[in-house]
Image (spheres, rainbow, N blue to C red):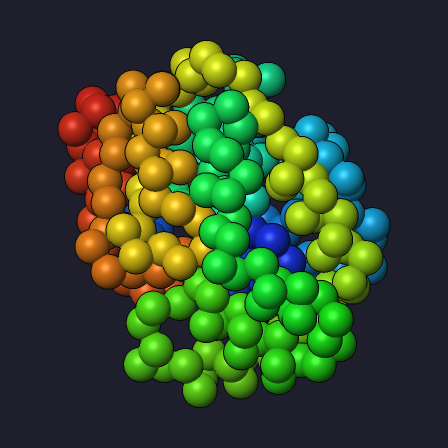
Length: 254
């Protein structure tokens, strides 16, 4: 049974860096696969759906094409977390475990909590300068990463990713539209769920994760200093939380 990794807005499998391999090792060398949303990564030339529902259907089709079996386990962040939550609610037999990182969704959070107003001017400027790779990636790093020890290396890698698989401004807008319009069902999915959040997330208010976990009675763990991109800022902490949680919830890492 595979673990699937889903990234957020305009990000792709390569943005996980070494996280997938680290998670696989700490889980006992389980299979960990990073999937791309339509419009990103290997599917950058495709049109992004304007809804989270559409993204779920695309991923389910990809699993069938790759010959992957369900149920599977999903670790997802931000927009990917919305996709994973919708998948688990609408197709409960297909998701066995769910780890949601710094995600947000109605009806549990308001628009100003889901995207902090202090960042709106930067988002507007980012949209106007989307084709400027260096500027765009620097802004994204500033908004999402509190660990800056590898910033120069990160930006070099991110620029190469953008050059090889550029996400169009139109697809970025569709993904943002899908995220803004998404509202999940109030009832929790039946699978075991872990919510991870960052106390110092400058993009999405950490209360979004707290309210989601409270409404679903899910386990919630909060990192004290990481930013929105928690797996980037402290991959080891995320892996430790996932391993400990799988052991506590009785199914073991497999």
